[in-house]
Length: 284
Ligand code: FES
Image (cartoon, rainbow, N blue to C red; front, side):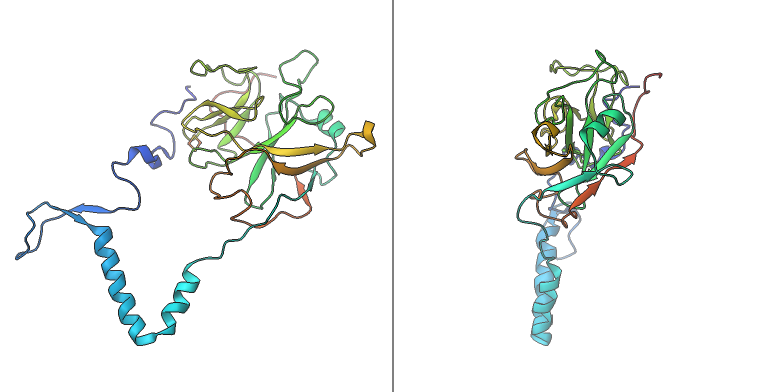
């Protein structure tokens, strides 16, 4: 099965490049009523027509009710919720215990197919938690990747909301080594055998290099969560924290990653979820 997800894929009808006029303008081809001047079939600008109707209604209601309009408009515009800066949030394992790098290395690796998600910095912003270390010494995986933490620099976190049209996990999912054979339109990456792929329209991201784009239609990388590992050799307790985000482009659906939702508490627990995969996992 192709994982480039052609026209048969879900949501493909929602692609902006499928529309023949920009969103926000509604046009209709309609005959003009008798006595009108425009010829049959002339294009009627519904946006302008509806705006005039709205202004007329507001004028009438305003004359009758005065303050009612002001009150209604006040509530028509929802307040912007958000936070001012990235908080330091300790990550917890699926069982609620503090996540430590040694626990992560014992439980998760590049071959782990189950998704592990956590929310940060807002409660509506899910992220992948990945350990790219090989399952066995010399096996497929990656260490010392950009932004990677832990003893081998293999633990990373990326937004789990696709940068194309915003499909969230599990529709966008991590594909462990050997899951699908895939070429990437001439783009090169350290290791083509594992990546993040979105089943909605086929965007693919390089987990070994800041979730950079391997295939479109997405044109931006997934925002990378900055992790902090408290290294025991430097007096730390081996814990892992989310402390920021290193990508200039915000999480999809947010004008600013820090706005459009409510802050997570002081800890954020991993949630396990089965991915949507468009091909087969390798045999164990
Ligand atoms: S939402 Fe379109 S590729 Fe992910």
